[in-house]
Length: 83
Figure 1 (tube, one colour):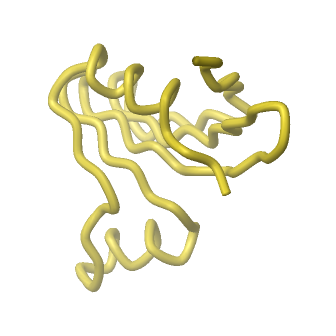
Figure 2 (figure 1 turned 135 degrees about the vertical axis):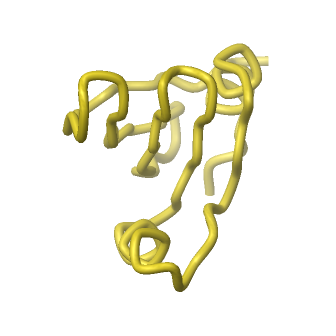
């Protein structure tokens, strides 16, 4: 099984230990861009679009995925099916 390539294309620091990262996930055939809110390194919320992320900040949306460990996050990123 071929794992996805993950590239951070942008990182915005909200505080020293809270970031919003823009990630590109790609394989041989496709690429997707997702947004990751990293809360102090122990809560990771993934958003499939900027609109969903903005809605989260305004209390209108929830994240698409939530991980409580970096290991689980990395496993998902490396193995998610890209369409």
